[in-house]
Image (cartoon, rainbow, N blue to C red; front, side, top):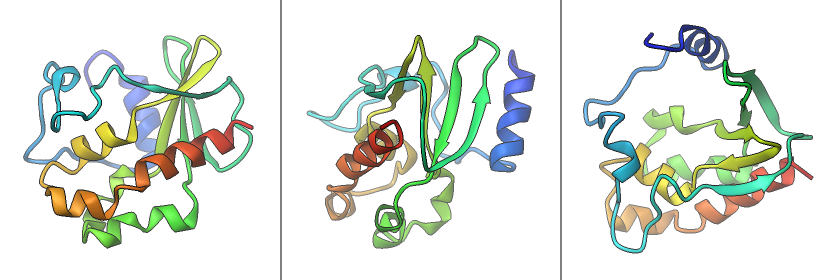
Length: 145
């Protein structure tokens, strides 16, 4: 469980038992991961609102540093993107999460998150869901209005 056993326990309670993929990267390599030219990096998070999500919240977990991890239920039309690319076994991608820190809610750029979470996704399949990153951002922003 590393340095944050209570956080890991809270996540397991909210999400169930998760396991990493065989293709996983070490945590030290994640900030430098780059799917391809023109795609975002880890540190290019998107501010989606203030500190109070108002709807479509599945869970809120306060971390040991005071930040809050929020799980969001995406709209039904946006949740179906995994079936478009035949990746229903990657359901751990959902719910999508935001982090509230310093009075601002941020999400990982969905282009980065999807590329990282679906490492075997080819460019053809990525193009099938090219509208999804923007839709995810809009869904989460709507939760903070």
